[in-house]
Length: 96
Image 1 (cartoon, helix red, strand yellow):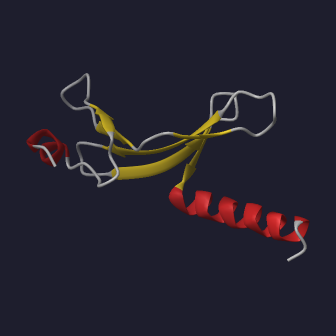
Image 2 (image 1 turned 90 degrees about the vertical axis):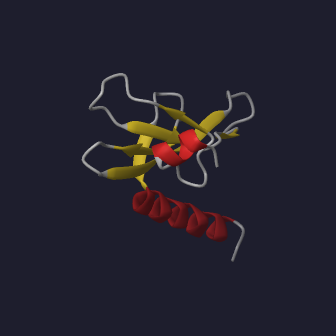
């Protein structure tokens, strides 16, 4: 981990970050984007893991799913619940 990454307190998955434009702004950390096609002719959709670090010490980690309309931001807990619902429907569809 570079000295700059240590100063920014980067999470292990941080591949890029955005430093604040203002002195009291927070740092933003981003994991590598993942993409998938949700339909044959559709553009690939992005799933992004991000964390914002605010100067007061608050951290917020979110997952953003871009379905072509600007994205839907979820907490990690909400994303885990959504993933379990999708997996349950997949299990039903394949007969498990």
